[in-house]
Length: 413
Ligand code: ASP
Image 1 (cartoon, rainbow, N blue to C red):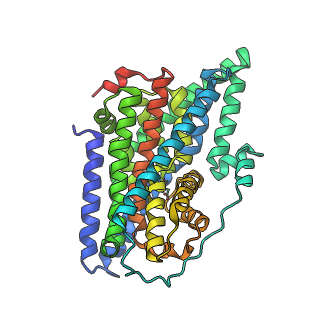
Image 2: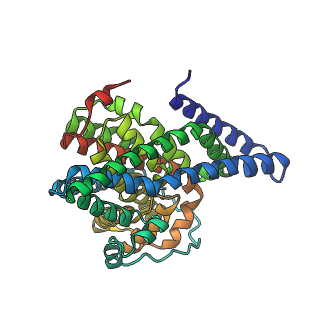
Image 3: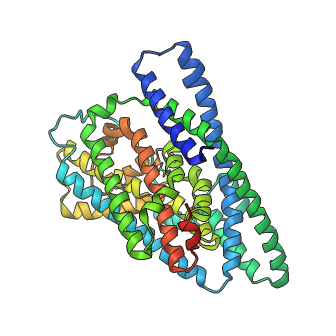
């Protein structure tokens, strides 16, 4: 029997091939387009993404409550949290630095061949003060209903710490949460069986509607982002994993293939989260006490791929408008793009919205976003694949440092 991962891989290749092939024929308005690409494929794809999303809130809440309860309320959580956030910030800052360096060398926006009278309406970002205050939920039920991940994380940690301090009463609740956690993991397994169909439908529709025409026009920009994503994924991640854990990077990447494919197909770190958590625990051997914290946090604040796109896009726009932002400008980009990627929600396309923040900070025209919007969907898929890889790698590194990585599981085929 073919393994599920192979089935998903084949589905991915078939979806891309059929979508791109159909795109090259003129099917507009025809029966094939309405019955399949905008009909069946669209329906199945959307149902698939919805079924992943439905798991996110219950999974984060239950899993993180279990994780925190098992750690006990003895300050371990605080230390682990600082390490995790530090590593997430470090990888993101490295990501933008690579992006800026490549963009400055390759110069994707030079040559002044771009129409710079484009228009783009940026939405205003909330002030940092409100962002901080809003981390603590005033109503946990509302937080769950709205899927506000940071608030759910805060509530789950508090709840878990309280369980661990409540003696025999807490122990009873902890036991039932552990059972609940098993049940939710089983739900993930059930949905994974549908993954090949979901992935095929999502990709067939996306590649049918997107096509590669715009990629040709923005080829150099597109390739600079792709190159930076590849370098970050292969050089930085591999080195960090090898140096900080001694684990075999090839095995790591083999294990997380489904996570990357889900990130690519859904373009959403959030929707991918159930798969990331399941894979990090079951395939990489990270204990629940670590994974349940690092993965949801990463899906919410760690976006290395997004930061890369924002770095290259900033340089591209500066060059297209022939504005020199100078060294201070570049340093500002590193800082603001790190913050912007933290503020980017793990859903499709948001990275482009928070790019406005970075551009404003260095005095570049926000309308510049209109120049790159055409190829953003494809890049969104690729950068999300990197975003979720980053979440998994940091999880692994933190687990190793906390003695919470089961090496036998990691080394399993
Ligand atoms: N789609 C990305 C994610 O979910 C965010 C972005 O860059 O737009 O990770």
